[in-house]
Structure formats: C-alpha cells, structure tokens
Length: 293
Image (cartoon, rainbow, N blue to C red; front, side, top):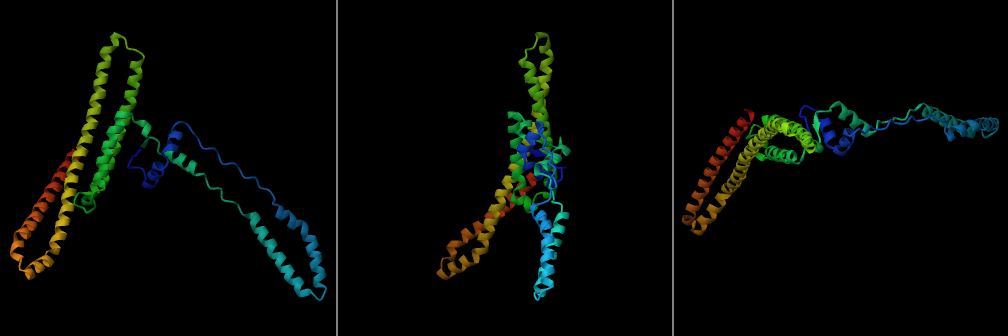
C-alpha cells in the first residue's frame, strides 16, 4: 500500500500494518460496539456480608475471654479484608477500545490519504512496483546515509513522488476499469469516434506517469553507480592503509623494487575511483534536479 507522506508517521505505520483490515473496512465492515459490562455483586462479597454477624459474635466472645489478644488480631484481620473488598467494589475495570476499532477510526479519518493494492489494476501495479524499487534503492543506499546525496531532500521528495505516482495510477486504474466495462456492453458505430479520444487520453496519462517512473529509475541507476564506486573506494583505502606493512616486508626481503609498479597502480586506481565516485554523485544530483522540474 501507499500512504500520503503528510499522514503522521505513527498513523501511517498503523495503517500499513493492517492492510487486510483496511480492505474489509473499505468493503463496508464496521467493528462491533463493545458490550456493556453488567455490574453484579460477587459471590465473595455476599459471603463476607453473610458472615459478618457470626464473626462479630465470635470476636465478642474472644474479647471477653482470656484469649482477648487473639480476638484483637482477628478483628484487625477482618477489618482489613472488609476494607480491601470495599475498595475493589469501587474499582472500574478499564475497558480498552478494541484494537480493530482504533484502526477503523484512523482509516475513516484519513480516508483518501492511503491507497490499497486493490486500487491498482495489473498494469498500474507493475508501474508502481518499479517506482517503489527505485525509491527504496536510493533511500537505502550508503551514499544517501553518508550525506553524499541530498538526504534531506530525498527523504521529503521521494515519498511525495511515490504518493503522486500512486495517486495517478489509482485514478488511471479506475478510469480504465470504467472504460473496459463500457466497451464490454458494446459500442455503437456512432460512438466509436468519441471513444478514440478517451483511449488516447488514457494512453497519454499512462505514458506521463511512466516517464516519471523512468526518471526515478535513472536517478536510482546513477545512485547505484555511485554506490559501487563508494564501496570500491572504501576497499582501496583499506588496502592503502595496509601498504606500509607490505612495503616493509618487501624491503626486508629485497623485493621492493618489483613492488613499486603495483603500489603505484594501486594509488592510481584509488584516484580513478575517487573521480568516478565524484562523477557518479554529480550525475545523481543532476538526475535529482530533473525529477524536480
């Protein structure tokens, strides 16, 4: 599913975690109201009330006898039990709203700001998947996390692009469904001339959305090139950091003259990768600017 990036993140996460339930809500399902909990006197309370006269009489006998200390202890224990029972009578059990009702209320409140898989026909679903793969690869890249790209703008603009593409594809899917249903009923020859411009409008709209997705894919491809150069540069830098140990070993073994060309080539490779990385990042930035236009 796709959620409008303007929806609060905690609500968006809740909606994404309950796609099947959202489909049921879309189909008209309503969660049942929580049943009222009847208040009734518990059996322990009734037993305590019935035993009170007998307990009082027994304590009176104890207090009038040499066992008065035991009577006081029994009296204190009984009073303690009664106080606990009185406190429990006043307690109201928290009736937490069922989780499904919470999802239902958020779904109704943000209706129109999320799109479900059933909102897209097969062709639109494939185009949307392409866009989501491209966006995901950019946002998950190391060079984006390291700030070599404009990570702030990526975090804002790419979800907005995903939502806009999804919104247009959902609208296109609905119109295509209506168009197919219309054609399935049969079209009179006089109406065929009117149908053709509508079909061209559908095709033109789809082409425009696909062009957006292709721009995202080009951006993702530039980012992938920069990502490969970034990782290769890291490996080269790691090797260069180890060079002194190898140079020392070669010098001690008398083979250092043979290693000079290889060491120089390693340095050249590092310089080439550095230039490649900068060029790839620059290309990614240019592709990003194209997306904004």
